[in-house]
Image (cartoon, rainbow, N blue to C red):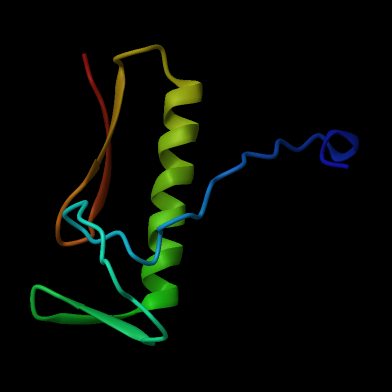
Length: 87
């Protein structure tokens, strides 16, 4: 269907996206909690998971569109996402 409309589909595996924290560590037991606490900040688990899915997507797009080693995606512990072109 995407080809019919000139669109591209990029698959992103959502596994562990709600459990993966800003520093890359994984929560062992998230259970049914509606939010997570990390470094004194409480975040809704669905919003946090969506953020991580977006990061996975952006990483795939950048890796697929740029010549190897020319672009970088920097995700900081504060959640800031920066994109840079390397020279």
